[in-house]
View 1 (tube, rainbow, N blue to C red):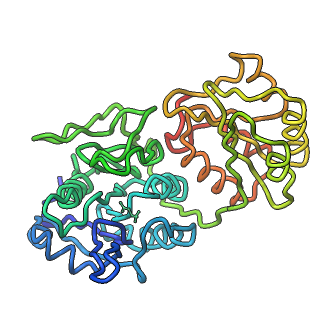
View 2 (view 1 turned 135 degrees about the vertical axis):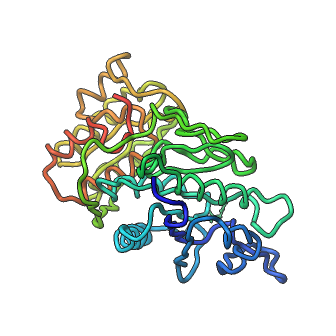
Length: 345
Ligand code: ASP
């Protein structure tokens, strides 16, 4: 086991509530520099492992996130991969589940922890959750056994739970417990001790060099079905020439209306080369298009099964797969596979 002093963690500070301060005039929160975070968490200076920081400029509220920022993150990780034992991405909560999902696909053969965290209350406030989140995330990123990291995946740490990043979704805008992983158990639960769920953590089966993917296709639509959705809305999405893929957010186990115009517009879109993926609107459970006649009609129209993907993971998986510019057949076969533990087969 490596001596503690040798361990090094890199914090990539992107912004988010954790480091925000209130504007004295508008009273709105806006991101502030990392020295502010350091002042509030003096423990960072005496952690028992080296902690370095790279700060995004400008810092962002995560509702401003876009793929260019994800590319910046994976480039930083690639560039510093050998010098650090683990990486922390300090990020706003609003889109943290999207970023965690995206990074999991963009970092192929990852063998080191990349832990995203943030907070619901700024770190300078009395009841902040930011301090505990940050300190525990660092502890997890630095945790090793026999010189090997305990969590060599993209994970999200929040309020006493460590989750696989691409299984998460933000489910509360007010509770400290802001994230859920409805279809996959926590990778670790934190009380007095950190209890790792070794059976749930993905360990690499072979040692391959890290490979980053930087091309992401963004012409993807998410169509959430609702009773009364009109034909012109559906057609506007399905017939758009730029659209490469559509996530259909369906009801229950993957059901939708069987109105002929609806099924026809999907069939036409598939014929024109669009990838249409079925993801359920339900927070938990998976799509099974064979269960009901309404689901079967989607299958017949050429819709792909999204299994138990979150919308965040489904969207970023499609961005990644379409960004690879491989053939549609290959994309279809990757959609039926778990690439980073994002679906249960
Ligand atoms: N709007 C903030 C952000 O996502 C919210 C947060 O960090 O909790 O950057």
